[in-house]
Picture 1: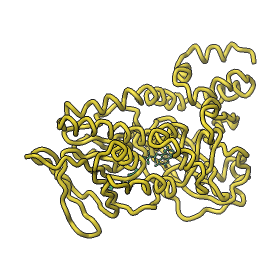
Picture 2 (picture 1 turned 60 degrees about the vertical axis):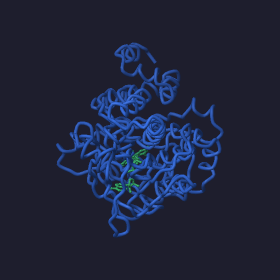
Picture 3 (picture 1 turned 90 degrees about the horizontal axis):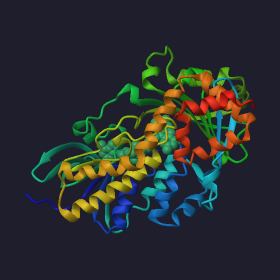
Length: 414
Ligand SMILES: Cc1cc2nc3c(=O)[nH]c(=O)nc-3n(C[C@H](O)[C@H](O)[C@H](O)COP(=O)(O)OP(=O)(O)OC[C@H]3O[C@@H](n4cnc5c(N)ncnc54)[C@H](O)[C@@H]3O)c2cc1C
């Protein structure tokens, strides 16, 4: 049987919207559905790293500037790391700054950032259906049959290629991609919005506090426009399960019992409720495709295991999925063997970084090591510079894995 060669994207978050925009750029008509209507919220730290910018620029060189000009978006120029012992270090996003006009990183509530992308989808090539939920899927001759619930009406769509961008609970990833919660490769996360947190960095640095009770994981405070802050905590599920307290209690305790945080939150107001969601980490290589489907972003478990950053990897994978889709349509091949080129292109781009971040995540289990490196870096400008450049330079970041790096620190008198 020959199906109409129209790819279908499930989900219009960063992965799905990016994939759709690239398909349109390649002139490929497609359907994209999302169960939500935009603008919609998504539980997240809302931090957009510099890795988001090249994808936006590839879509349209003007897009980074448009994003930076949004009043709902705050430019960020670096990170403050606080070690378990209380010492902290400021790391400007140094080397990226020289390449771009705007700030090297951004913070934007996902309600706004995802809408910024999704509002650009309706462009002649995309049939964008909001309020349309994928409820089930079956394999048919030549493709997949999708059962969709659109505003209470049931309908089916058949397609030779389905691009799954429906996040951590992806229907097809669970059914055919072997996706399940693996506690050693999964993180629990909660997010709150506060107004009036004091002592935020003047250049909007994001703050990662590696507190003893939250290792491997961290407490974060990310500035937002209008005097707000995204505040949250995340921790590897394997270790969280061993704790007597849940993440909400751990977060409140971090605020109430860490003297520096207690002072800064003294006059802060919690806005709305605290929400939780899972982070499927890319610390294990998993298949990202099968016959007639590709998995992108959280559906493919591609979140950085050290930083918890998933938006840029979602966008990268969405972009690469569009390229694979273009090839598949051209050659009329949608079998598992052909689509495996997508796994290769994603992992060629991301695997070194994911694997290295997994090593760093494991090092986080040693609070003394963290304290040691940060205290040294505070006294040694060259080391500070090296760590600063590590955010942009993967080869340099590899040095963190080497015992010789720590030996040099140990025997350096500064
Ligand atoms: C607490 C927390 C903090 C985080 N902080 C950061 C951070 O600061 N920076 C960062 O880069 N990353 C962060 N992440 C990770 C980031 O949120 C994700 O990696 C990112 O959202 C993945 O994008 P996505 O497009 O794959 O999926 P999503 O953003 O989850 O989008 C999936 C879309 O699919 C739709 N959908 C779902 N199911 C269906 C269905 N059955 N039918 C139709 N549509 C469906 C949803 O409505 C949604 O719009 C954080 C995650 C958590 C949980």
